[in-house]
Image (cartoon, rainbow, N blue to C red; front, side, top):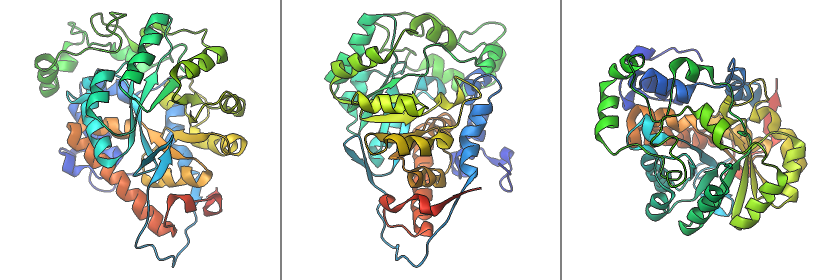
Length: 393
Protein backbone atom coordinates (compact mmCIF):
# COMPACT_ATOMS: atom_id res chain seq x y z
CA UNK A 1 0.00 0.00 0.00
CA UNK A 2 1.42 3.39 -1.00
CA UNK A 3 0.87 6.15 1.56
CA UNK A 4 0.39 9.69 0.35
CA UNK A 5 -1.02 11.34 3.49
CA UNK A 6 -0.82 11.08 6.42
CA UNK A 7 2.63 9.63 6.93
CA UNK A 8 2.74 6.89 9.61
CA UNK A 9 4.31 9.00 12.37
CA UNK A 10 1.30 11.35 12.26
CA UNK A 11 -1.10 8.56 13.30
CA UNK A 12 -1.24 8.93 17.06
CA UNK A 13 -4.95 8.91 17.89
CA UNK A 14 -7.96 6.91 16.80
CA UNK A 15 -9.22 10.02 14.97
CA UNK A 16 -6.13 9.85 12.75
CA UNK A 17 -7.17 6.40 11.46
CA UNK A 18 -9.05 6.43 8.18
CA UNK A 19 -8.52 2.84 7.06
CA UNK A 20 -7.48 -0.52 8.50
CA UNK A 21 -3.81 0.03 7.65
CA UNK A 22 -3.87 3.18 9.79
CA UNK A 23 -5.07 1.10 12.74
CA UNK A 24 -2.23 -1.33 12.12
CA UNK A 25 0.24 1.58 12.34
CA UNK A 26 -1.30 2.79 15.61
CA UNK A 27 -1.41 -0.74 17.06
CA UNK A 28 2.30 -1.11 16.29
CA UNK A 29 2.90 2.08 18.24
CA UNK A 30 0.80 0.97 21.23
CA UNK A 31 1.73 -2.70 21.71
CA UNK A 32 4.87 -4.42 23.02
CA UNK A 33 6.50 -5.94 19.98
CA UNK A 34 5.91 -9.62 20.95
CA UNK A 35 2.17 -8.93 21.19
CA UNK A 36 2.01 -6.90 17.98
CA UNK A 37 3.90 -9.53 16.02
CA UNK A 38 1.58 -12.24 17.36
CA UNK A 39 -1.36 -10.40 15.74
CA UNK A 40 0.52 -9.35 12.62
CA UNK A 41 2.63 -12.41 11.93
CA UNK A 42 1.93 -15.56 9.98
CA UNK A 43 3.54 -18.83 8.88
CA UNK A 44 6.97 -19.35 7.36
CA UNK A 45 7.71 -16.61 4.78
CA UNK A 46 4.24 -15.06 5.20
CA UNK A 47 3.56 -15.30 1.47
CA UNK A 48 0.01 -16.49 2.00
CA UNK A 49 -0.74 -13.73 4.51
CA UNK A 50 0.25 -11.13 1.90
CA UNK A 51 -1.64 -12.91 -0.86
CA UNK A 52 -4.88 -12.96 1.17
CA UNK A 53 -5.27 -9.21 0.64
CA UNK A 54 -3.42 -8.89 -2.66
CA UNK A 55 -5.84 -11.37 -4.29
CA UNK A 56 -8.59 -8.75 -4.24
CA UNK A 57 -6.41 -6.44 -6.34
CA UNK A 58 -6.44 -8.91 -9.22
CA UNK A 59 -10.18 -8.45 -9.78
CA UNK A 60 -11.68 -5.15 -10.91
CA UNK A 61 -15.18 -3.86 -10.24
CA UNK A 62 -17.30 -2.86 -13.25
CA UNK A 63 -19.95 -0.38 -12.05
CA UNK A 64 -23.36 0.42 -13.44
CA UNK A 65 -24.70 3.97 -13.21
CA UNK A 66 -28.01 5.87 -13.21
CA UNK A 67 -29.51 3.28 -10.88
CA UNK A 68 -31.35 5.50 -8.39
CA UNK A 69 -29.38 4.47 -5.30
CA UNK A 70 -30.33 7.08 -2.72
CA UNK A 71 -31.84 4.28 -0.61
CA UNK A 72 -29.88 1.04 -0.32
CA UNK A 73 -30.03 -2.06 1.88
CA UNK A 74 -26.71 -3.39 3.17
CA UNK A 75 -28.30 -6.16 5.26
CA UNK A 76 -28.14 -9.89 4.65
CA UNK A 77 -28.97 -13.15 6.42
CA UNK A 78 -26.16 -15.36 7.69
CA UNK A 79 -26.91 -18.74 9.30
CA UNK A 80 -30.49 -17.71 9.99
CA UNK A 81 -29.77 -14.32 11.56
CA UNK A 82 -30.36 -11.08 9.68
CA UNK A 83 -27.42 -8.73 10.08
CA UNK A 84 -26.85 -5.12 9.10
CA UNK A 85 -23.79 -5.84 6.96
CA UNK A 86 -22.46 -8.83 4.99
CA UNK A 87 -19.45 -8.76 7.31
CA UNK A 88 -18.48 -11.16 10.11
CA UNK A 89 -16.01 -10.23 12.85
CA UNK A 90 -14.14 -13.53 12.87
CA UNK A 91 -13.38 -15.18 16.21
CA UNK A 92 -9.83 -14.68 17.47
CA UNK A 93 -8.05 -15.75 20.64
CA UNK A 94 -6.45 -13.90 23.57
CA UNK A 95 -8.04 -10.51 22.94
CA UNK A 96 -7.39 -9.04 26.41
CA UNK A 97 -3.69 -9.29 25.64
CA UNK A 98 -4.19 -6.74 22.88
CA UNK A 99 -6.33 -4.34 24.92
CA UNK A 100 -7.71 -4.71 28.43
CA UNK A 101 -11.29 -4.45 27.13
CA UNK A 102 -10.76 -7.47 24.89
CA UNK A 103 -13.73 -9.50 23.67
CA UNK A 104 -16.11 -7.27 25.62
CA UNK A 105 -15.28 -4.31 23.39
CA UNK A 106 -15.75 -6.32 20.20
CA UNK A 107 -19.02 -7.81 21.47
CA UNK A 108 -20.43 -4.39 22.32
CA UNK A 109 -19.61 -3.00 18.90
CA UNK A 110 -20.98 -6.09 17.14
CA UNK A 111 -24.21 -5.87 19.13
CA UNK A 112 -24.57 -2.15 18.41
CA UNK A 113 -24.21 -2.74 14.66
CA UNK A 114 -26.06 -6.09 14.61
CA UNK A 115 -23.09 -8.02 13.24
CA UNK A 116 -22.05 -11.62 13.66
CA UNK A 117 -18.98 -11.98 15.84
CA UNK A 118 -17.24 -14.89 17.48
CA UNK A 119 -15.15 -15.80 20.46
CA UNK A 120 -12.48 -18.47 20.47
CA UNK A 121 -12.25 -21.50 22.72
CA UNK A 122 -9.08 -19.64 23.74
CA UNK A 123 -10.94 -16.41 24.47
CA UNK A 124 -10.06 -14.28 27.50
CA UNK A 125 -13.75 -13.77 28.38
CA UNK A 126 -16.01 -16.69 29.18
CA UNK A 127 -18.71 -18.23 27.03
CA UNK A 128 -21.17 -17.57 29.85
CA UNK A 129 -20.39 -13.86 30.12
CA UNK A 130 -20.75 -13.31 26.40
CA UNK A 131 -24.00 -15.27 26.29
CA UNK A 132 -25.49 -13.38 29.22
CA UNK A 133 -24.56 -9.87 28.17
CA UNK A 134 -24.65 -9.65 24.38
CA UNK A 135 -27.73 -10.35 22.29
CA UNK A 136 -26.23 -10.11 18.80
CA UNK A 137 -25.54 -13.17 16.63
CA UNK A 138 -22.51 -14.99 18.01
CA UNK A 139 -20.48 -18.09 17.31
CA UNK A 140 -18.00 -20.13 19.31
CA UNK A 141 -14.82 -20.93 17.42
CA UNK A 142 -14.35 -24.51 18.51
CA UNK A 143 -10.97 -26.21 18.73
CA UNK A 144 -11.09 -29.99 18.83
CA UNK A 145 -8.95 -31.05 21.81
CA UNK A 146 -7.46 -34.40 22.73
CA UNK A 147 -9.38 -34.03 26.00
CA UNK A 148 -12.85 -35.34 25.15
CA UNK A 149 -14.24 -34.00 28.42
CA UNK A 150 -13.18 -30.49 27.44
CA UNK A 151 -14.75 -30.93 23.99
CA UNK A 152 -18.08 -31.97 25.50
CA UNK A 153 -17.97 -29.16 28.07
CA UNK A 154 -17.47 -26.51 25.37
CA UNK A 155 -20.55 -27.72 23.49
CA UNK A 156 -22.72 -27.74 26.62
CA UNK A 157 -21.54 -24.33 27.73
CA UNK A 158 -22.23 -22.83 24.29
CA UNK A 159 -25.71 -24.38 24.29
CA UNK A 160 -26.50 -23.12 27.79
CA UNK A 161 -25.28 -19.62 26.84
CA UNK A 162 -27.54 -19.65 23.76
CA UNK A 163 -24.80 -19.19 21.20
CA UNK A 164 -26.16 -19.11 17.66
CA UNK A 165 -23.52 -21.29 16.03
CA UNK A 166 -20.38 -23.33 16.51
CA UNK A 167 -17.57 -22.79 13.99
CA UNK A 168 -15.21 -25.75 14.12
CA UNK A 169 -11.68 -24.78 13.08
CA UNK A 170 -10.33 -27.57 10.89
CA UNK A 171 -6.95 -26.21 9.77
CA UNK A 172 -5.03 -26.31 13.07
CA UNK A 173 -4.43 -29.97 13.83
CA UNK A 174 -0.81 -28.85 14.22
CA UNK A 175 0.50 -25.33 14.50
CA UNK A 176 1.91 -23.41 11.60
CA UNK A 177 5.53 -22.30 11.77
CA UNK A 178 5.10 -18.78 13.15
CA UNK A 179 8.66 -17.57 13.09
CA UNK A 180 7.92 -14.06 14.40
CA UNK A 181 6.50 -15.61 17.57
CA UNK A 182 9.61 -17.75 17.91
CA UNK A 183 11.90 -14.76 17.55
CA UNK A 184 9.99 -12.66 20.08
CA UNK A 185 9.40 -15.67 22.39
CA UNK A 186 5.72 -14.75 22.66
CA UNK A 187 3.78 -16.79 25.18
CA UNK A 188 0.41 -16.58 26.84
CA UNK A 189 0.25 -15.27 29.43
CA UNK A 190 3.38 -13.19 28.68
CA UNK A 191 6.53 -14.14 30.55
CA UNK A 192 8.44 -11.18 31.94
CA UNK A 193 12.03 -12.37 31.78
CA UNK A 194 15.25 -10.34 31.66
CA UNK A 195 15.34 -10.98 27.91
CA UNK A 196 11.76 -9.87 27.28
CA UNK A 197 11.41 -7.13 29.88
CA UNK A 198 12.53 -4.25 27.66
CA UNK A 199 9.97 -5.00 24.97
CA UNK A 200 7.17 -4.70 27.52
CA UNK A 201 8.70 -1.87 29.57
CA UNK A 202 8.78 0.42 26.54
CA UNK A 203 4.95 0.31 26.43
CA UNK A 204 4.07 1.30 30.01
CA UNK A 205 0.36 1.96 29.35
CA UNK A 206 -0.08 -1.58 28.09
CA UNK A 207 1.95 -2.96 30.99
CA UNK A 208 -0.01 -1.10 33.67
CA UNK A 209 -3.31 -2.29 32.23
CA UNK A 210 -2.09 -5.86 32.02
CA UNK A 211 -0.68 -5.94 35.53
CA UNK A 212 -3.31 -4.00 37.48
CA UNK A 213 -6.61 -4.73 35.80
CA UNK A 214 -8.47 -8.04 35.82
CA UNK A 215 -6.09 -11.00 35.87
CA UNK A 216 -5.62 -12.50 32.44
CA UNK A 217 -7.03 -16.00 32.00
CA UNK A 218 -8.57 -18.34 29.45
CA UNK A 219 -11.81 -19.14 31.29
CA UNK A 220 -13.19 -21.57 28.72
CA UNK A 221 -10.23 -23.88 29.28
CA UNK A 222 -9.39 -23.26 32.93
CA UNK A 223 -11.51 -26.13 34.26
CA UNK A 224 -9.53 -28.66 32.25
CA UNK A 225 -6.04 -27.31 31.51
CA UNK A 226 -3.62 -24.88 33.12
CA UNK A 227 -1.79 -24.02 29.89
CA UNK A 228 -2.44 -20.50 28.71
CA UNK A 229 -4.00 -19.23 31.94
CA UNK A 230 -1.67 -20.24 34.76
CA UNK A 231 1.19 -21.84 32.86
CA UNK A 232 2.77 -19.77 30.08
CA UNK A 233 2.85 -21.54 26.75
CA UNK A 234 3.36 -20.56 23.14
CA UNK A 235 0.36 -20.89 20.85
CA UNK A 236 2.40 -23.24 18.68
CA UNK A 237 3.05 -25.54 21.63
CA UNK A 238 -0.58 -25.33 22.71
CA UNK A 239 -1.85 -26.46 19.32
CA UNK A 240 0.74 -29.22 19.04
CA UNK A 241 0.21 -30.49 22.58
CA UNK A 242 -3.53 -30.01 23.15
CA UNK A 243 -5.32 -30.33 19.80
CA UNK A 244 -6.17 -33.70 18.29
CA UNK A 245 -4.43 -34.39 14.96
CA UNK A 246 -6.69 -37.43 14.48
CA UNK A 247 -9.77 -35.28 13.98
CA UNK A 248 -11.57 -36.58 10.89
CA UNK A 249 -14.91 -36.32 9.11
CA UNK A 250 -16.51 -38.81 11.48
CA UNK A 251 -15.54 -36.59 14.43
CA UNK A 252 -16.93 -33.53 12.61
CA UNK A 253 -20.24 -35.25 11.94
CA UNK A 254 -20.49 -36.39 15.56
CA UNK A 255 -19.81 -32.87 16.80
CA UNK A 256 -22.44 -31.46 14.44
CA UNK A 257 -24.97 -33.97 15.79
CA UNK A 258 -24.01 -33.31 19.42
CA UNK A 259 -24.42 -29.57 18.95
CA UNK A 260 -27.64 -29.71 16.97
CA UNK A 261 -27.64 -26.01 16.05
CA UNK A 262 -26.15 -23.94 13.26
CA UNK A 263 -22.79 -25.45 12.40
CA UNK A 264 -19.92 -24.00 10.37
CA UNK A 265 -16.55 -25.36 9.32
CA UNK A 266 -13.77 -22.77 9.37
CA UNK A 267 -10.72 -23.51 7.25
CA UNK A 268 -12.19 -25.17 4.14
CA UNK A 269 -10.14 -24.53 1.01
CA UNK A 270 -10.81 -27.38 -1.44
CA UNK A 271 -13.86 -28.26 -3.51
CA UNK A 272 -13.80 -31.81 -2.17
CA UNK A 273 -13.93 -30.67 1.44
CA UNK A 274 -16.63 -28.12 0.65
CA UNK A 275 -18.78 -30.85 -0.91
CA UNK A 276 -18.21 -33.14 2.06
CA UNK A 277 -19.26 -30.34 4.44
CA UNK A 278 -22.47 -29.85 2.48
CA UNK A 279 -23.10 -33.60 2.34
CA UNK A 280 -23.02 -34.00 6.13
CA UNK A 281 -25.40 -31.08 6.68
CA UNK A 282 -23.16 -28.18 7.71
CA UNK A 283 -24.92 -24.84 7.45
CA UNK A 284 -21.88 -22.82 6.37
CA UNK A 285 -18.21 -22.98 5.55
CA UNK A 286 -15.60 -20.31 5.99
CA UNK A 287 -13.17 -20.44 3.08
CA UNK A 288 -10.09 -19.63 5.12
CA UNK A 289 -6.39 -20.33 5.55
CA UNK A 290 -6.28 -18.99 9.15
CA UNK A 291 -4.96 -15.63 8.06
CA UNK A 292 -1.91 -17.27 6.48
CA UNK A 293 -0.81 -18.49 9.91
CA UNK A 294 -0.87 -22.21 9.10
CA UNK A 295 0.16 -23.56 5.67
CA UNK A 296 2.27 -20.93 3.94
CA UNK A 297 2.12 -21.17 0.16
CA UNK A 298 -1.57 -22.09 0.21
CA UNK A 299 -4.18 -20.31 -1.89
CA UNK A 300 -5.87 -17.12 -0.78
CA UNK A 301 -9.54 -17.56 0.16
CA UNK A 302 -10.66 -15.04 -2.48
CA UNK A 303 -8.64 -16.86 -5.16
CA UNK A 304 -10.43 -20.10 -4.25
CA UNK A 305 -13.87 -18.64 -3.71
CA UNK A 306 -15.34 -18.86 -7.21
CA UNK A 307 -14.80 -22.58 -7.71
CA UNK A 308 -16.11 -23.41 -4.24
CA UNK A 309 -19.24 -21.28 -4.75
CA UNK A 310 -19.81 -22.99 -8.11
CA UNK A 311 -19.48 -26.41 -6.50
CA UNK A 312 -21.63 -25.97 -3.37
CA UNK A 313 -23.06 -22.46 -3.23
CA UNK A 314 -26.58 -23.73 -3.85
CA UNK A 315 -26.37 -26.09 -0.84
CA UNK A 316 -24.40 -24.28 1.83
CA UNK A 317 -23.51 -20.73 2.84
CA UNK A 318 -19.99 -19.74 1.82
CA UNK A 319 -18.15 -17.08 3.83
CA UNK A 320 -14.90 -15.68 2.45
CA UNK A 321 -12.59 -15.29 5.43
CA UNK A 322 -9.33 -13.40 5.46
CA UNK A 323 -7.45 -10.52 3.92
CA UNK A 324 -10.36 -8.06 4.08
CA UNK A 325 -9.13 -4.50 4.50
CA UNK A 326 -11.66 -2.48 2.47
CA UNK A 327 -15.38 -2.40 1.88
CA UNK A 328 -14.71 -3.07 -1.80
CA UNK A 329 -13.12 -6.39 -0.80
CA UNK A 330 -16.45 -7.36 0.76
CA UNK A 331 -18.29 -6.34 -2.42
CA UNK A 332 -15.94 -8.41 -4.58
CA UNK A 333 -16.49 -11.47 -2.39
CA UNK A 334 -20.27 -11.06 -2.57
CA UNK A 335 -20.22 -10.49 -6.31
CA UNK A 336 -18.29 -13.75 -6.65
CA UNK A 337 -21.09 -15.52 -4.78
CA UNK A 338 -20.13 -15.46 -1.10
CA UNK A 339 -22.81 -15.05 1.54
CA UNK A 340 -20.53 -12.69 3.46
CA UNK A 341 -16.90 -11.79 4.05
CA UNK A 342 -15.07 -11.99 7.36
CA UNK A 343 -11.77 -11.22 9.01
CA UNK A 344 -9.91 -10.94 12.29
CA UNK A 345 -7.05 -8.50 11.83
CA UNK A 346 -9.46 -5.91 10.40
CA UNK A 347 -10.76 -5.31 13.95
CA UNK A 348 -7.84 -6.62 16.04
CA UNK A 349 -5.58 -3.78 14.90
CA UNK A 350 -8.33 -1.35 15.89
CA UNK A 351 -8.88 -3.06 19.25
CA UNK A 352 -5.16 -2.88 20.01
CA UNK A 353 -5.02 0.74 18.90
CA UNK A 354 -7.92 2.11 20.97
CA UNK A 355 -10.14 -0.56 22.53
CA UNK A 356 -13.88 -0.26 21.93
CA UNK A 357 -13.51 3.18 20.35
CA UNK A 358 -11.09 1.73 17.82
CA UNK A 359 -13.32 -1.21 16.91
CA UNK A 360 -16.29 1.15 16.59
CA UNK A 361 -14.41 3.43 14.22
CA UNK A 362 -13.08 0.51 12.15
CA UNK A 363 -16.56 -0.99 11.75
CA UNK A 364 -18.01 2.42 10.82
CA UNK A 365 -15.28 2.92 8.22
CA UNK A 366 -16.00 -0.47 6.65
CA UNK A 367 -19.77 0.12 6.86
CA UNK A 368 -19.40 3.43 5.03
CA UNK A 369 -17.08 1.91 2.44
CA UNK A 370 -19.57 -0.89 1.74
CA UNK A 371 -22.47 1.56 1.40
CA UNK A 372 -20.47 3.99 -0.74
CA UNK A 373 -19.22 1.17 -2.92
CA UNK A 374 -22.74 -0.18 -3.45
CA UNK A 375 -23.95 3.22 -4.60
CA UNK A 376 -20.99 3.63 -6.92
CA UNK A 377 -21.61 0.12 -8.27
CA UNK A 378 -25.27 0.98 -8.93
CA UNK A 379 -26.82 -1.66 -6.63
CA UNK A 380 -29.57 -1.13 -4.08
CA UNK A 381 -29.03 -4.39 -2.17
CA UNK A 382 -26.17 -6.80 -1.69
CA UNK A 383 -28.22 -9.45 -3.54
CA UNK A 384 -27.78 -7.45 -6.76
CA UNK A 385 -24.01 -7.95 -6.79
CA UNK A 386 -22.98 -10.56 -9.35
CA UNK A 387 -20.06 -11.72 -11.47
CA UNK A 388 -21.04 -9.57 -14.43
CA UNK A 389 -19.69 -6.71 -12.30
CA UNK A 390 -16.21 -8.27 -12.02
CA UNK A 391 -13.28 -8.63 -14.40
CA UNK A 392 -10.15 -10.57 -13.57
CA UNK A 393 -6.94 -8.98 -14.79
